[in-house]
Length: 300
Image 1: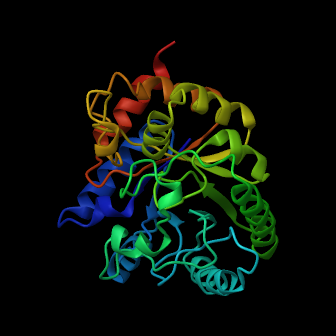
Image 2: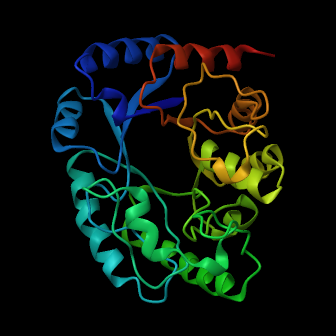
């Protein structure tokens, strides 16, 4: 099994000590340990991790100024941006890339984390007719709309083209946080993209809750599809006791037990379904996460 931590886990002064103890723990369990570069990873973080010889993957676009939106007829600007980024990935020895690929618009908005917040960058994409709550960023389920179907076909075609352009990479499409018209909210749709997918537990948890869809069934559907090439695995503080319009993303440690979410069940469904690549998108992850995963694997 391959376990990567997000690069944000190695921003502290003790980054090398954490890297060594986590790598040592993973190797003791017989796992490969690596780091997934966050899309805003500073150059000095990239350089120091590369010097350590740790296996790297990446959340694209890496330090670019625009989102990669493939759900439009003409995505030539995104393909040009991908060419530049993938050249950098090759130099770093990266062969596994994950990104968000689809918005209900004909442009690529600014990428967050370069002086602007996520909400600031995504506001130009907001469409009130697709909002779940008036004036708020969350999506309603618009997957039955004619525009969605049209853009999904464009996305499918463009993802196929991207995979042809970069055949030596595993390129995974990640399910979206359900806001600002992000289209890839449910695996019932994504399995038809005919492409490798990344299941993000926090994004799926909020998408299914707000749409009244069964979370575990979506996980099971994804696992059965054989399309999942990667999982962004993290816990969430959000439960049914919190109003749906006040929910947000997860990125919490595995030590946070959320019985409604039931992450042990999610992990076992994916692991026993054949998935062997988990990325812990948790800024303060440490060896405890690895020990917890080992415990879950060892449960009959």
